[in-house]
Image 1 (cartoon, rainbow, N blue to C red):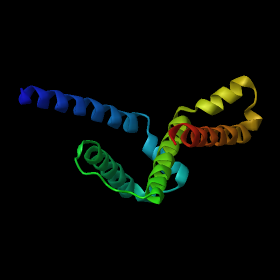
Image 2: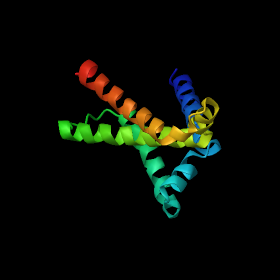
Image 3: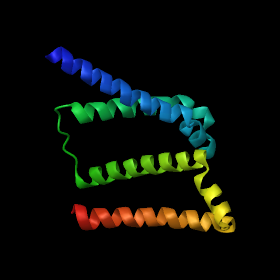
Length: 136
């Protein structure tokens, strides 16, 4: 029975891993993020960070070790997660040109930067509201 479970786990891992690599490769998220941050010379660091993050995520998700972290440590952990998700979403949005095309069609392309800032600040406020009100 453990052979079947192992094959199912391996297949699921390959499917998720393939989707993750396809997301990063086909959409060009990492190269666009490097271009926006003007850090093309740091390609090896990006690769190492992605691999380390994937392996750390796998270990922390499936490992038996509980890591005691203080409130400050959890806050920093959440901050880094937020930065990662925000930059990934911004890179994806930039790659797909969602906001520029939408704003141009609606006719408010002159207000692109203020509207993007409103979206970002609204996302921050909504996330803080959810965590402060519902999670505590």
